[in-house]
Image 1 (cartoon, helix red, strand yellow):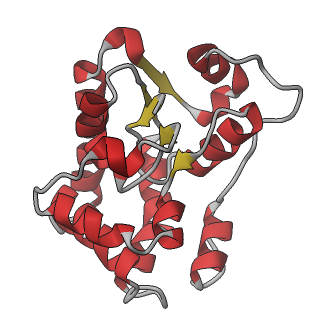
Image 2: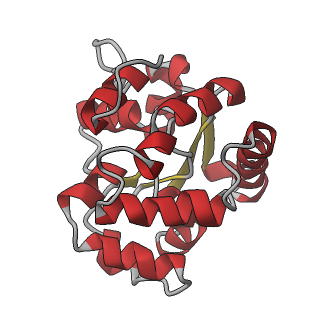
Length: 206
């Protein structure tokens, strides 16, 4: 584990996952890994209840964590991999909330995948525990997002932290992970329209 992602979902984590793959950085643990490994759902459920896994055993084969559910345990993961660095990806909070409202929220609450175990797990963790069942209160949720980012910025080791926006492209990310910039465009993955199509939601979003 070389990179611990502390970024909320819908901040560009799948684009960064693709970027790290292009760089040859190693495999990233993203929410997609939960779908590929359904036995992981129970591990995250126990973590939600306060029983942490042995992070070295659970995530030791990955070079990075990105996205939920791992982002909500970035401190615990960093404690187990103290040589890793921390990546906080930020996004305009109004754009972030709109994207969440158009993608993740309907997927977790009413979409065709809502009864899937992985979806139930992340609903319980993100909507119920992190956001206290108040996602639809935009002011509350945006402030919660901003407070979370401020907490990461103030508590992560400053010499190991990159606060980053996907629009910044290759240069700061490559400098942070110590790899040369590739001569290809920075990937743009998982737009709201792509997410909604994949999740079986109504077409739309931005």
